[in-house]
Structure formats: C-alpha cells, structure tokens
Amino acid sequence: MTDVIQHKAYARIGLLGNPSDVYYGNTISISITNFWASVKLEPSEHLIVKPHHFHDLVEFDSLNHLVNRLETEGFYGGVRLLMAICKIFYKYCKNNLIDLHERNFTLSYDTNIPRQTGLSGSSAIVCAALNCMLDFYKIRHLVRVEERPNLILDAEKELGIVAGLQDRVAQVYGGVVFMDFGKTHMEKLGHGIYSPMDISLLPPLYLIYAENPSDSGKVHSTVRKRWLDGDDFIRSTMKEVANLAVEGRQVLLQKDYAKLASLMNHNFDLRRSMFGDDALGEMNLKMVEIAREVGAASKFTGSGGAVVAFCPAGPLQVELLQEACEKAGFIIQPVQVASSFLNDMDLGNSSST
Image 1 (cartoon, rainbow, N blue to C red):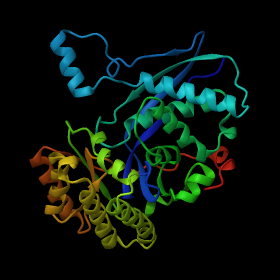
Image 2: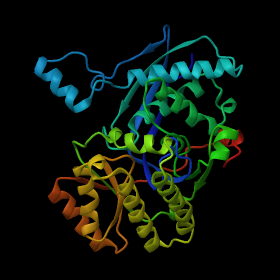
Image 3: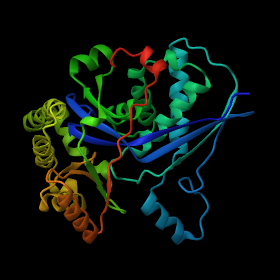
C-alpha cells in the first residue's frame, strides 16, 4: 500500500516586472512561507475529492449566514481546483504516452492564504495537488519542471480563471526566480526561461495586507483588452515595466538596495499609470501610500490586495512602517522567503536551472 503523500505550495510575491498573462516580458517573483496551501493524497478504494470543512461549506445556519458567507468568501472553494488538475494531469499523461497505474486515491486540502490578496491562493492548491500526483504515480522524472507551471495554469483556465504563468513558476520552483517570458521563448518552447536566484540576495521585505481586501481579479480587465487591441501606451509601458525586472536582477546581484527601492516604486507608478486609481482601488492605494509616507518602497504583490514593502533606511523606518500600518488597520509581517523546492530528480529533467 502506498503511503500518504502530502505537499505544500506557498504564497507568491511579485517583486519586479510585468504580469505574465499575455504581455510577455520579464518578472522576478518570490515564494514565501508566510502562507501556504497543503494537499494530502491517501490511497483509497475509490477516487474521492474531499470538500474542505470551511472553504467548501454547503450547510448554513440561515439564509443570512449563507449570503454573508458568499459575500466574504465567494462561491467557490478548492474542490473544483483539485478536480481540474486531475483532469489536466490525466490528459497530459495520456497525450504524452505516460502510463499510470490504476490505483485510486482521496485528495483533501487546507490553506491559510488570505483570499483576494494577490498572493496566488488558487494556484497554490493546484500546485500542491500536482506534486502529490507526480509522487503517487512515480512519474516526477517524466514531467519536466518547465512544463509543470503550464499544467497548473491549464487547470485554472479549465475553470475560466484568467491568469498567467508567473505565479505557477514561483510555486513550482520556490525561492526567488527571474522569469523571461519573451515572445520567442513562449512560441518556440511553450514556456519561459526560468532562472532561480540566491535568496540571500534579498534584503528584508515586509508584507502588508488587509483582512477584507477588494477583489484583485478586477484589476486586469481593461489593460488586457487594450494590450490585445495594440494600444501604444499600454504596450510601451508594459515593456518598460518588464525591463525593471531585468535591471532588478543586476541590482540584486550587486546588492544595490537603494536602487532596488527606486525600481519597486517606479514599478508601481508605471502600473498606476496604466490601470488608473479607480481600477486599483482606494484600499490598495492606501497601503502603498502609507509605506511611502515613512520613506519605504512599496508595490503590489500581484494584482492588488497586498503590498510588498522595503525599508532602505533600516530598523527605525521599519518601526515607523509597523506603527503606520497598525494605525490604519492593516496587517504587516516580515516576508519569509522559501528555499528552492527542486530536488535532484527535478533538476535532472530540467534544462533551465
């Protein structure tokens, strides 16, 4: 009998660069252990996907309870994500002539990644589940590391979730990753070029978020359409944002943290010029502005809902930032960077690391 298999995937912070949805370009992202999603796979007679006792709630105290719950937590939990990756995984293996044994399993999950904070909670569940199945079927060596983010993304696309590869790459690789999503790579290889970086290159960073954030998913809509329509301003600005990641990679290698602060601020300013204040949302802007008021650099971790901040002036500035966040009702905590998740078996089938 196969042992119980359990994997975690962690929240993701976008440090520099542009989104990877359709924009090509570059980004530097960080996997952080502050928050995680965990999936457990247990051998069983039938294939079962277990609903979570909180996130997949279907029993309520009253109609009022149901409505309040939907307004704060949304309609969907993680069951649909687990089912989607099962389908994508099966079809991938079938299309690539990878034989799977016929034993069954039960999938269950847990997560503490705050909703709607741009910290990649959905993809973390899918990533953890994929890792469980790779080990259950003992085919980790047959699925190249570069292809795994695509499988995670395909599972989310199956559910109509609009997303890109950035988050999934960070969660597959772990640590700090520089990603090149240039059009040539994407069209020729079907994925970007992913280069892990030493986590010791990072200065202390801080995560700021709200307990009841606005929906981060609303931010992409107008800009994405304008990009696809060939809008010159959006195209040129998005290229400029992508170049910040290229420059940021060298800045980190040189540990030029004053320059890093400047790049982070410029990254947000360019994003603001594209999306506009209405799309970004008052609460999201307030988190950025609170950090800047004490001289800290700040930008969104993703599409909105949380901010990553850096205090180039040191401990006193950190104290001022903590006080300002607490006064405004925001949560702040030090970023805990995950180490790389890749092992010898993973590296053996990867050409990008």
